[in-house]
Length: 553
Image (tube, rainbow, N blue to C red; front, side, top):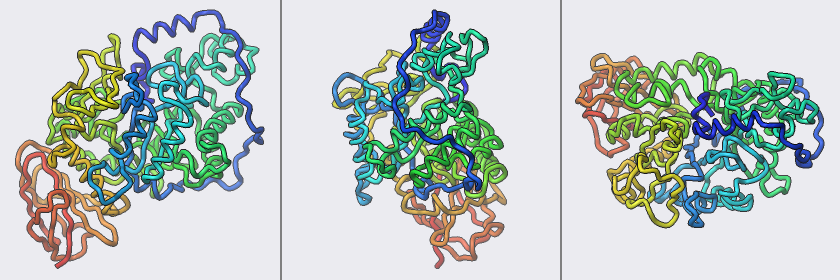
């Protein structure tokens, strides 16, 4: 959850909530759900090691789904868990030999808890699946089917804010004597002014320094990590995407990690630390296994509201990407893992960032899947769905979370219809649908399928070293780097300009062993001129990318 008011509410809802905040204190509500009494946590004498990132987290390709928009199983127009389960073969059919699925191996669900708003980031009940999406049993089935296909599952873990309709907040509002009074931070003695996300009254922030709040947070996590309630924490949810981590203290996240890793060491904690690299680096120490690479995103797009700017807008040179990667080296612990992305549910979609340029969208994807880090794909990105934040009259982020476009006609089994204003970004018969692209070998969808398989078949792209290759001659629009491990040497060369470019790469200044080498583009299968390991000259078409496999001969 980023730090913008428009992120969570339409203007009309915000006014309604503000009015509710001024109303008399609500009536008290029942006590918290019954839980096993746990001892008060104390820091371990030996600190938790900085990094115990599960291996699967280093090799994952993460797919982000807004359940409401993805697939509808019951015809009410709202996406649900059963609909998502029905479409899992699109994401990964479990057979590595097939090429008709995307091949992703991790799935992140935007909030599925009962909530006050469509987006789910204002939780009302952390222990209930949103009725629009189904039941806990539906979630269990989804997770089982994901695991059968080799897909790990992340839940959006939202403890930086709750709804002002949450029963504990309703009991504490205007009631200093409430047993939940210390669960929130109040700015007046009457307990009517309080700390909230982006100062929006509808989303108060729990006081994570309160041990009772920490216990509640752990109770929520345990509940979902052990989905079937059998006491085995290794066969349920695989990861937690920790929303708006900045809302809680380092001690809060350290306790979470310490206790949850004791239950399942293979659990992956992914932190949304929307900040600078220097700040993000502090959250790896005994807290998160991985974080989102916001510094890299800002180099690519400059701003979540922007289009046509940064590297993706061909305004800034792609060499700026290297600068963002150097920040990781400077501020993150050795081996720190980042999740890299071109867009997500809080940003303008990448196809809008590149202003509808399909070739540039393909090039951006090639960059994403060849850089160090775990790539994230936002649902519909792979078919080129557009999306720009609305003006709040009355819609905001809904335009960036439109229904997944399965069919050319925007209608058919499983198509969601919950948000279909006349001014939506995606339309019928616009070439942007799974139906229109799935059998087209030159479609954007086909390109994403190839890139994901490339990354999974060549561990040098996920686990290998990264090294920039400088140019002895050529324009700043050309960006080249090596991805290497003991088994493979890959040379990536990208041309971020709408003009052809001639470039001479200075491979003698790199760690590439002496040649001679053959060079084969893994994306097209084309053979390129061989090289000896010194100066290597290439002619690059406009907006083109090469992923060259170098083999000695």
